[in-house]
Image (tube, rainbow, N blue to C red; front, side):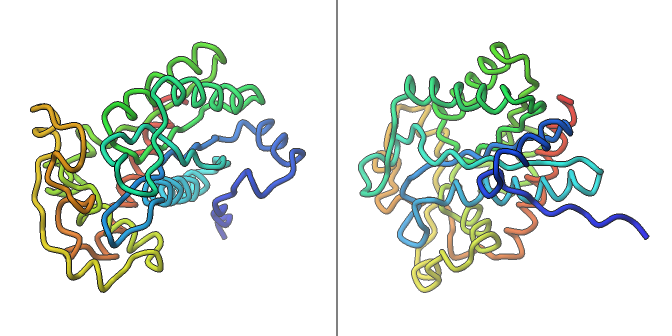
Length: 254
């Protein structure tokens, strides 16, 4: 009989003595990163956090099936999120502060012997994702740890995430709403979701043209794409794609 697959384990729920054992066993550390940001009238502020934690959970289970222990650290819940800054509840922090803070968090995790570290980010605002990569490089240089930042915006992963995602109009649309229906369906306002009209927008093109807020992109309710087309079935498929990509990125650094 094969050994059971280890379930996902969260560092915040353990005493320091158990964390020490995970580090001694050369366990993989995962750091989920999201934001506190408006995601339409049908989704909560913590969408990016929920999704990144669920990707970490599924990645940990995948790693466990390969005999590799994994520990998920508490998520980063604040980010540079200037595009949604005018919507109540959104909390945006400066790039300088975010970069310094995230670098120190990663160095702190690495200081106890964790390597590799997987940085699982689901907040896709360009300035934010750039600073996540920069923080990982700076933390790796300071600590000597191997730090991977899976980037699902790029090939070969992006085409697997659907047409809405590749067009760049997926904020709180079919893509993210499907992920939430799979990860935390109780947080999705179904009556609101199914009533929302499709709003097909090419966000990268608008940003390149100079737009700097969701309002300037035509997103008066902080959503784009097609929330009404979302499904839990598609969300589970997407989560598995993201977890597989995260696993591959970590092993490429190991």
